[in-house]
Image (cartoon, rainbow, N blue to C red; front, side, top):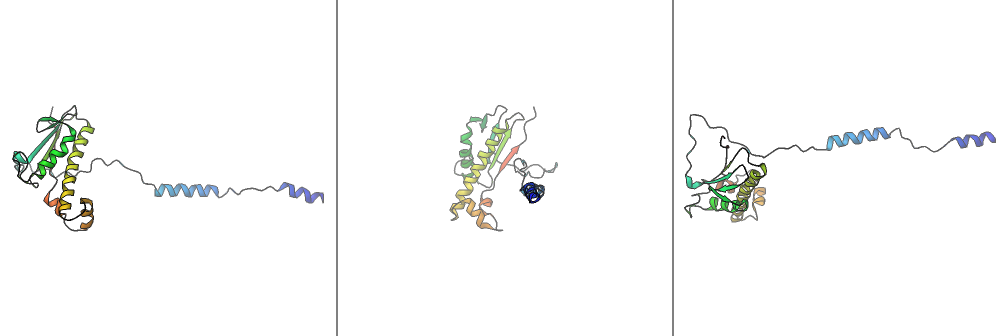
Length: 184
């Protein structure tokens, strides 16, 4: 009887931990496989191929060009006059959507070019803000064009295209020229 009591006392309840390492390893593999790591991609712009050295660049009428210069201090010059960042979007919309009405702006949206020029020391945030304002002006114009075609907005219009041609973009192509900085 005393031997029976001694055996019962020596047994204690234990949690089996042998499979814990396997579970932790499987969780680690799961997170490694399913996690995506963001990579800085920069500004998603595709530059056109370089022109042939023997071919002159196509002529552009002065009227069709809207010049934006961002100097090394971040000051924005719109047509060589100091301007606020908030005015760029409106000027680009006026320039591109003019359709020949005002002789100071472009003749046609397909001929309109917005030239952005910077200095080498231009702060990146000023350059990016100017570029964002120009793109936002184009998106607002495209949104307006999509509404004139009977769509609720440009995003819905693009969603309805499928593989079809983007008529809005062919009516108003984005004519943005990013000039190289002047050598200094």
